[in-house]
Length: 232
Image 1 (tube, rainbow, N blue to C red):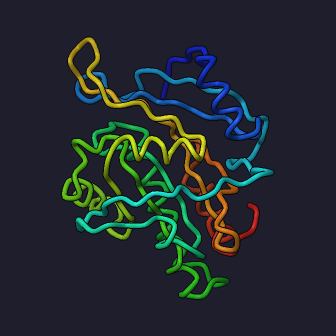
Image 2: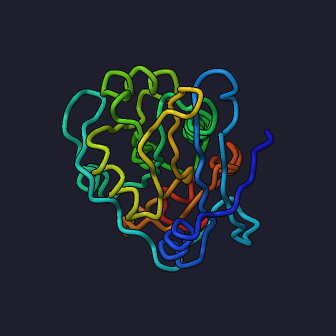
């Protein structure tokens, strides 16, 4: 899939570099809906220099201190609910035509493949948490999130809430999010980082970053190690 490359905005580049301590590449993808929405409007990226799907961080991120609303309309304290559990967090939105559903489907397929792994106990497999935090809370209500995730994996935790709260939480793990807005054609566009952050069950630190090019095979291979708190 061809994507237009544009120079990284200096301020965003400094933010990404500082957040990752120059260890990983961060991508901003502007997703739109409607005609021509089969690819991001724009993408900015930098090479991490790693041949692996995941970048291992020397200084892991703290888990975002977020208390949001889940798909059942109940409060969900991210840190408390996922404490001591292997956790994959992704920020995106349900109207995204490409990157978000692809990423979530890749994670869902890899999670399903876990059942074939005989080296993990069922308890270990069940401990995995995949969390999808919306970047478009005005449209992604708890009900809308629940309906969308049901078609991917109903066990995924879907979270929504106040945009500024979500944006601030994402920033703590180096993910840049801009408020959804209409483009010149009147289509709603959301610009957001497309990384998946993996948090260790041993330390609760976010020690792995996956870019949008990570495949089902990458996640299938790495998730068993993530569940054990190991590097891929």
